[in-house]
Length: 334
Image 1 (cartoon, helix red, strand yellow):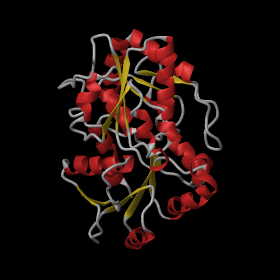
Image 2 (tube, one colour; image 1 turned 90 degrees about the horizontal axis):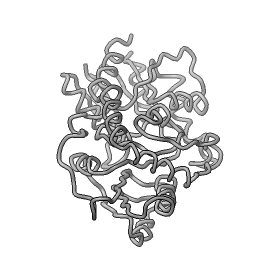
Image 3 (cartoon, helix red, strand yellow; image 1 turned 45 degrees about the horizontal axis):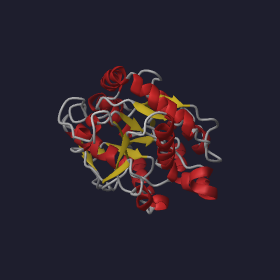
Image 4 (cartoon, one colour; image 1 turned 180 degrees about the vertical axis):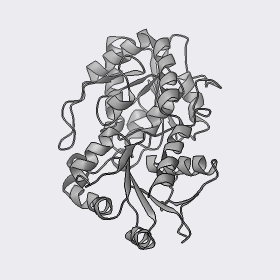
């Protein structure tokens, strides 16, 4: 089977990460994935949307059309333009696609709300998967501690908005004040958009170390060496960086919005503070003190959390399982 995935893979970004992993894992099974158009494809697979010429071509040729949906645009992240930014994906959803794959239950709810419910919605929910051999709790560890009792926290992303990083800093400041000043936060990733100048401020904080962008081959050695992964992104649809951290045996301290309650089982592989409201129309309130309390609670039973994190990743977030589910749908669709 040849799958046409019209997508320009960038160096950074969650969708680019998915596209690369999808191509690599599918081609290991003997199938093909093409990012560039050729008329001999068997199925058109869309990450949210693509140029209309490709869906029109697929419809004319009687090709199978599968749309993968993650999050959608809404007021608090896109302003008044959000309906326009959703329009193309909604049009493809209602008039062209044969099957929908939602990244999470949260993604399905967002699509129904902001793209409109689809009639006869043939669909499946498939969570992201990670290579459990690359992202593993076994292997090399970086030496990140200045002293034996220091707590080491880690976060990684392409940082575009304040909600991705500022709450983490606020939570850690509360933790240092209430519990233990002997901590270090390692931050991996680029800063762009509204936070592109933030590193200049972060460099002044003694408990913060900026690592810059790290590749997949380097990330696990840092994650294995840390005590916990911190995550405060607004309404994540199914965050790869969280799942990768779980696979490395890291418990997660985060916020109960987006798909996080579907991924994190409280008191097992992490703890989430409550998140009142949806965050769709105005920014949520972040309780830095409760976040600090959860950091402390996880550290009290860190060994058990680590074991559960890896076990849950193996059970639910294998890249092979994810790939097989996609191929089963694409191969059996009529």
